[in-house]
Image 1 (tube, one colour):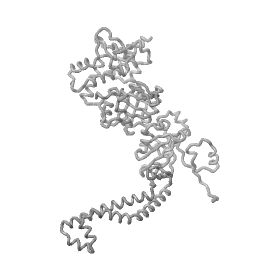
Image 2 (cartoon, one colour):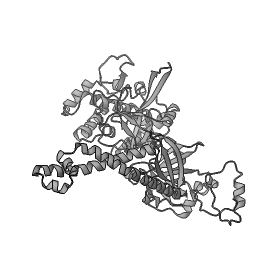
Image 3 (cartoon, helix red, strand yellow):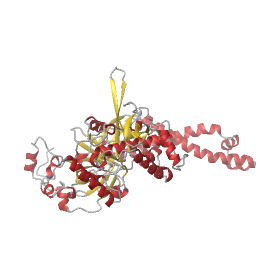
Image 4 (cartoon, helix red, strand yellow):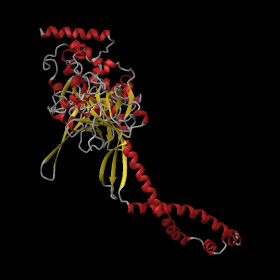
Length: 574
């Protein structure tokens, strides 16, 4: 039965290649392959043992071009074999390839990734590709293609562009995990510390990536492992201001001393589909998101996992603008912190300015007299005599031309210098008089919920959606501009980019926005019913009886902690 299934799959695969002009997608190939069967009977044992670290050591049979052995793992068999860098280089030269465009490291690098890819394809599709995909002829053919694209056509792959800093590392890219690197070191207390990093590849070149705590947990749980494809955006290339070329002798993405690292975080990393194409994600798929991906729900946000690339939020509550006031001492240590309303901020600012004006006037005359006396010690003798004379105007008229020029130049210079010295003297006096400095930052507090995209839900899920289960999150928007503030209205649905997410005091998520946060309404305005399904509730007055009952609940939601009341004041107690 298995033999018949294999023969049927083979015929279907060959007919598909003819129909598709020898081009077929991985998903179509998986359909043809059918249910995975045993690999050992259809794939050579040496192919099963190939990984990204030993792929360069694979050698092929010279006669049939099939994988023969891996140097270091098996003794060299009798007979002729091929696959060394020198042999491949000679073949490239014999094919009239320009030898000045490539080096031995270029050959060994691409040989590694081509062999690993072809071996993985055979293991994944043993019925269709077993013992005929990983061949020496196929490796040489793919090397020819890479030469034409990269070296002759100057179309550099994603990782090389990122390492060269020709393109920012923030661009959305799909990379494959080729190695999980573990570097052990002894600490001062004698304990062994293990640092975990990833080697990521686009199938052409590789780089080393450092991960945050959440991604590290996924690696330890083997949810991220060798062969996993990751979609990454807003990454950061650290370790070199000018970048590096992966073909430099000093560069090795598998070594601990690799200086250039890709810093990725959990909020900007997502698993990619198994058949996703490696490299930069085409702008046509995410141009409306500015080159990032959309986080669908606040439940998917990881506290301290980096900035959120983009998320659609419903503004459920907007509270009056407040100001965070800091009082700091002469050493810039904050000694007092207060939250002020707009009225209190205006009052404090008025008091501060009035006090500053009075103090400045107090020290101004004294500072001017002192500074003028100190400055006039360096004045020209003609100017000193003119000031000391009974009639400076008559004295000036009796001066020679050169002496008049000296006096005029000094007058101009003295005015500028005196103004600066007096201003500095007043500022120093103010610091001594009042060592505490005041600063304030405006912010708006919001309660938001993630907007439920109905197109992502089935009809049954949309119908049974429980809005009470959708969590609301506090969002603090610092230094908000007037333009952005006009968008922050209750019931509005906004797309926000570059929000910071942190864990609050009660283990809940708290979002933070600032001037760097981009805010815009959705291109297609959602219906009011759609907004209600996302958990938004319009403000309505609450009775005092309901407030009394709600106050006795132990676990109250963020919305139920605040009430809108319409009541009559019947008595004022003093």
